[in-house]
Image (tube, rainbow, N blue to C red; front, side):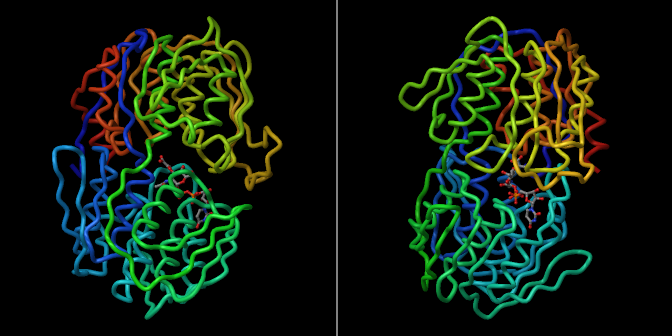
Length: 448
Ligand code: EPU
């Protein structure tokens, strides 16, 4: 299901969501673990892999390299790359996501050469890969960039002391993967420590890697000679859990999410409580609901972990359109992640963007003219509309807007949402949403 086709969701809003769902495992852990499986010739098994198109993309790239993949009905994926069949990732993967740059280090370890296309992903900022290139070069890779991609060569990668200019998730993952089988020790300073990274570290430790997460964003990796196959159940998707949690609160319903993990969501749960959301944590499930009558405004600054995730920001803005008063959001991770608010305004929201830093956190976008702060004046009723999804997380913000809006919405570009959220129509319908899938010509055009 590489191309999910031209689909739209038709939603009639105004119904509270009530019921129970199970959290999927984290897209941003599973996809990296599939890539990391390339560090061994032995078989690896990942359990409960979500049925999302991002995973299909990852598997497609890995199969091009020579991976054999099999699945059983339980959601488990067995993957093994006994031999490297190709060291090049095809141009058809150019610009689709962030994974090609993470394939460089495993390919260098296995074959000494890698050719990957230009990386892409959601259009939420420039998203350069300068940190990745610099750290790989520091570890001994020679990298040539041309218009279509990157060619990397290295007989051996060697340990290095890496200072990341910013705690980038992808660059940290790249350095860890490169370091596991490198000669000597690698130290990463200013590393990202997102739970998905820690989960991939656990996966690599099971494979035989020596990775130490120390205090102050320092990760130390001692290179080993070989890694072996393993089995792993990835962590729950804290972005998906938060998205459904906000849907429960915004619609005034009550949703139990099995598998939701409080430990990875402490910051989100604090914010949700402050805005008037309620939650109960029992065993391995969290139930979300509206705690009082009115939602309250709040000031949020997105940040790297353990801060408020940039991927929680978009549905939170939709939720805050329903809070009484002025909320302020300062986005410090991506410079251009508020474009979707225009459509919310078209639906009746009152959101103003500002290039100023509306908050006190250190921010790389200060005085650089990026509209990276938002002021939300609530509460405003929303009205159903025909809306076109620009990217994955904005997509859920629109779904949420459609769920609380008066009347009918048509959400075009479902394929963006289906990159990261499994079976949205089925799962939303199972908790009471009035949603169905319709063909859509418009998203066909957008896909080109
Ligand atoms: N950055 C650079 N140079 C680099 C790398 C990053 O300047 O070489 C900058 C980026 O432009 C951005 C910041 O550093 O401003 C953070 O980017 P990071 O590298 O941390 O992000 P990423 O690894 O590309 C992952 C997730 C994103 C998530 C971010 C932040 C995956 C596949 N993607 O992206 O998830 O928003 O970390 O937590 O893991 C999503 O799931 O919808 C999504 C966009």
